[in-house]
Length: 278
Image (cartoon, rainbow, N blue to C red; front, top):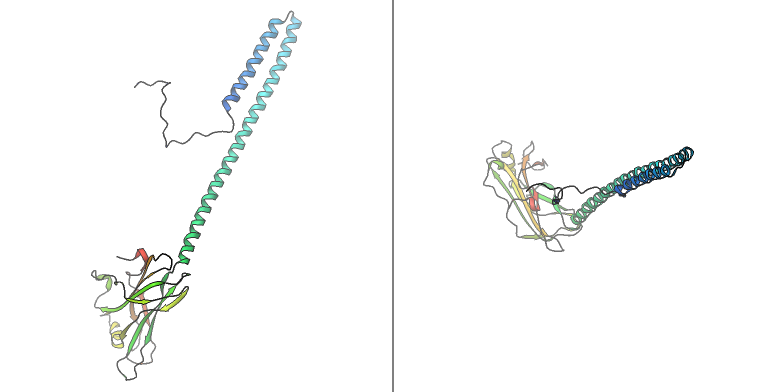
């Protein structure tokens, strides 16, 4: 189709909107032109009506005065336009600053709501893993218990909390064992109060096994899983932890040594809620 200056093109919806000023500068320009036209008309009228050289000179002088006044008015109007543009620019900057402040306030409110929700719900994580010698009055083989201490940092208690705990040892690192899967949901019910900790779940290992770990031929792992809900809408939450148990120097078959152990994260099965593997 041939282009026509009268053909109205559709506006691009994504194109930037034209800036709207506070004043119709076209109208002001038209007014200035009108003043100049009036001045010229006055000049012609005065010259045509002059009857003598003196009258002509007087008319021209009067016209010059009128032109000078018109020029002054035009200059004043230009100054007003420049001032209005300055004011418009300042107001646009204020509006931009206001929008930035509103966005910052919305972001802060969203962060506060998120924090309040996290604090209102129970939020369980591992606090520490305790390693204790098991008393054996009959003098049998020395054993130790591994017991996780869980912390509920939320402001409400857990509901419908179930735990599952296991210790297992293998002849190679767990990360090399692709067949290892996460723990299933446990069947033992417990509870943790708001902003409280609790010992939940444990397993027992022998001193002989701890000594064998020092040879580098066996690897011992402790794993635990908690499933629980909150007291409001029964939304399901989940926390898992996994640690490789590494012995310290010493003989774990000799009583009263209090050797302790080091717990190093497995690299898998340490997660909360949606970050946990299915």
